[in-house]
Image (cartoon, rainbow, N blue to C red; front, side):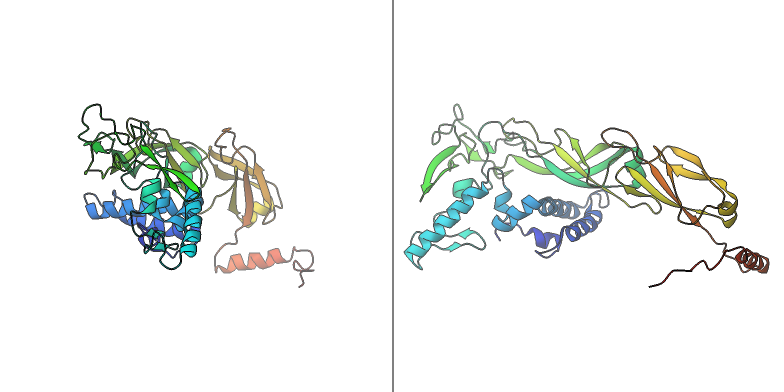
Length: 382
């Protein structure tokens, strides 16, 4: 596969399932996070690499394109459909010409998408690492995973995160070009950034080879290799709204990749992952919890305290409450992220037997047994 091997970067197999990829990424992110390794440049670069790999492999559509075309397929301006058309035409032409392949002696590797002779076809037709969009263009939206405590998800709050982002290159001002003479317009493409090319039955508009698609004259900026951006790690404050769920998206406008040639930046989408609570379980906007009671409370009835997202309430259980009986506390569940209306809290009673070897307690238990009517296990058969 051409370019970076994201599977090797994360240390997972190519057929790894999404949960395995997520689990591996979280483990590596915690290990190499800049907050855990302050001042460690190697850890910072490792964090950038694993974040880039996870961004590609965690998105089903991006992963599909990456598996088919490699890193090249994820670059801005890449057209998968045109690439497939070209591949099909080239394969047909190669078979028609015989074993000498593309252009008489050049090779065409359909598995890794490597083309020999002339120049790399993807760079030639779809733009390579130094290619850029002509004129102002909006930056790409990016996503980043964020693990949250269960209570923060219930009540909302604020947290600080460090993210791998990018900024406009200071040397070229984000244009990817330096030393532009005169009016700065590329004479080869007259500022369009594109030149026409025909390959068999497919017509393409390829990136101008002289200006790298910018439409501007000058030389490729060496500081950013013509991309117009440079990577950086940015620490930002994120406001968490009450009621976020596992997989919720929090949009931070303008915090994505910077625009090109003066274009606006993209947006950052924080994908929330909620840590499990030891007692409370969430089901949509409902919450569920098991609450233990004593034998005496179950038999005689009682008011027991139950913690809810809005504070402690007293739940009244009637005499003769059985183990497993469920009660509803209306409006005491999780707040809905959109409507802000809370769901319900369902409390399941668990009768707790005292842990004791005290003979008086054991004798009392035997005395209680005499009050059961019939066999409590009667009728339970396989």
